[in-house]
Structure formats: structure tokens, C-alpha cells
Length: 376
Length: 109
Ligand SMILES: [Zn+2]
Image (cartoon, rainbow over all chains, first blue to last red; front, side, top):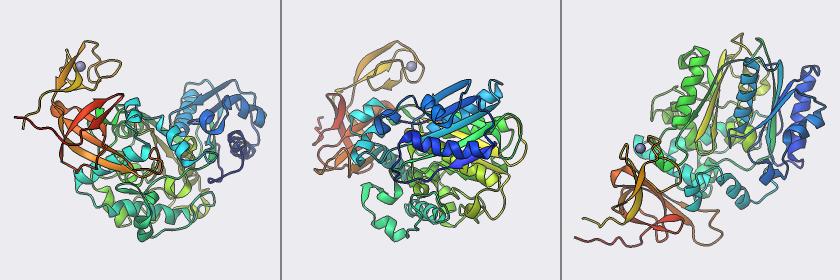
């Protein structure tokens, strides 16, 4: 990976293409404007949310690029991770030498009700017909998790408290202020057991990464994707995400490493209980054990397996199409020693970036290594 | 308690799995050979939630329940009356394009 750029996440006055161009410019600047022959842009709902389409030619024009190949990639809230993996596979296939991956979303131009409706379009039609929204289905998953493992609901609060604490050091975070457990519990109920501070906010933001063929710092070790039944009611397992388990298994296989070799992770925490489920699904701990890890500090930056040192989605903000690439960028910055105030006490060698698409119907796991891995 | 079969599902002729009516193939084995069947509308609540926020606009909160029917068929149902308890036995019925909990379970037999 040749360069990484992360934009400020929050309420931004700019449009989507402006946000993409800003991070793209930083990334190109960092590589001395070497030629780009592949441009991949990830965004979930550019049309409905930002009133723009054709984001690939729009970004290319803004950045003065003349790529040989260009794709827009959509995988709901995992669009940024999907864009990264698509670019990496193109480089692995030898179809390009140097790729610019952009991912972004512009969401704050709409009311919460409108954004909720637009995001719910990534749910199964039968779920939309029942008036279900992302938080509604996430709350059902959270209840199944509590019921299945007899888990402590306080572990959900611990997730928010930890990530908001970490976000304090993140200059790009939307929520750089810590919250107490009492503030989480006192925040308004969205869908029991989920309070407002257990749920992702509405955000604008973007990230950019330059990928090159050949080894370098923050090399791609493994790429994995997995699917589950589109509708929640058709899934075998409700307290765990099959799509993550498959994505992780495939990424570990490609990297030829085991979960024991991973030093830290950026996990998809659009809802606090998902961070617990994710940690179990990527194999770091067993089913029902993640709550204890968050409650006893094992997942804090100085813990035995740091999770979301950037603050994650709950601390950083959730520009949906960008979040998957933001997670990859934050993992890369740790591995490259560019994390600044967010740097982990022990410089990690292998990091995992995880991203959930929709209500975990299509998820992604990306493994990156500090040193030479396989190409790219 | 026995309840007359009244909830319409599809049953796969190849793998015999029951599933909710939908366009497409059997979700388990991909077979196209499926036929409608009526099963008991009674089921057990696996999870239920009251949604404070969209799509409920100011008015009463929107409630939905995840219900497991006989044969392992699960449905996501609107709960118009009240929020059912976890593990509670309820009855469901198709209403237009979605499924609803019946306000008062009708028992027979
Ligand atoms: Zn079948």
C-alpha cells in the first residue's frame, strides 16, 4: 500500500465528489502524483443521499486522472471494503499497476427519517414491508445474543464507552468526546436494548488508499468475503454473522495465517453489540465471550487484543459507503507507523479490517501486514 | 392447544423445507418445485422490539416481532397491539404485503 488518506468525518458542507477529491488529492500528493491506471470508487447510495451518480468519471476529472480502468462498487455499508478488495484483485490479476481507491458518503443533507428510509433499502423487501429499519433488526439480533449466551447488557455500554474514549485521540472523529456508562444508559431508547449511544450516527466523510503491485508497508495478506441469507428470518444463526465467519475464514486461508497471528482489528460497530459478535466471528474469542473482553479492558489500546483504536464507527462516525475503507485505512496507518496519537503501544505486525454490508448479508475481512506479504 | 392451519407458506418438494412465500427458488436447495401449504399460525416469540423513531413519526411506536412457527419457519411480524414478551406464544396472519400478530390469540380444541 503506497498511501493512505482519511478525511474529517462529521457534518461537512461539501458535496460527495468534493469529499472524495479531498482525500484523493492527499493520497496522490503522498505518492508524488505517479500515474494511476485503476480508479475504484465505493459508495452506498450516492444518488439518493448526495444527488450524484457517475462518481468514477466525476472523481477522475477532479483529480486529473486518466485511468485505463475504473469501477464504482456497491456493497451497502461495506462498499468501501468491497471497493478496496475489487482493486486488490485487479492488481493481483495483473490488470493494473497502481490503483486509487476512494470511498465516501454524504448523508447529512437529509433528515434522520429520510436517511433511515434510504438505508433500509439494503434490507430484504419483506423486512421493509414490515416497517423494519437497521436499528430495529439490530435490536432483534442483540436480543438473540443476550438470550443465547446470557450475556451482560452492560457489555454493550462498555463497547460505546471504549470507542468514544479512543476517538478522543482521533483528529478526524465526529465524536472526540468521551461518554460514561451512565450517559449511554440515559441516552434515549431507539429499539430495546439499543440506546442512541449504541447506534451509529449520520455522517459525511471519505477515505482514500493507493495500492501498488509489489510488496511494501501495509501489504495485503488476505481478502475474504462471505454471504448469508438476505432475510434475517432465513438465517440458521441469529447471534452470530455467517457472512463474517466465512469472510474471515477465506481471508485467513489466503494469507496462510491463523487468527493467533493477528495483533489488532478495526471491526464494524454500527451497533455496539455487533462489535461483540464481530470479535467472536473473526475467531479472536469464543461465542458469548466478547463481552468480558470489553468489560475487562482486553480490547482497549493497551489490552491484549486492541479493537478499534481509531474509535470505530461509534467514535469516528459512519459515512456508510466510506466506513469499510476507513477501517482498512486505520489498520494500514497503524502498520505503517502513521497513526500519530492513535498509535498502539506495541507496533503491530498484522491487522484485520472488518466490514458489514447491509444487515450482515455480505461482509468483508481484509488482512494487512506491516512487512512484505504477497502481492500487491 | 391446537390451532387450525391458516398461515400460508411454501414447501419444497425436494428437501421438504417450509419457507415464506416469495419469488424465486427454495432457499435451502434451490429447487423450483415448491407448492403452497397451510401451517399453524401459532408460534413462539424469539425477539421483539418497539421502534422509537422512523417509520413511526411522532405517533405510537412501531413494534415488530421475530416469531418462530412450527417446522422452523420464522417470520418478521408487525405487532399492532402491544409488545409481546420473549418466549410468548402468539398467532400470526398475512395482512397485505406483510405479516401481523393477531391481537388476541384465538384458541380452539
Ligand atoms: Zn428445497
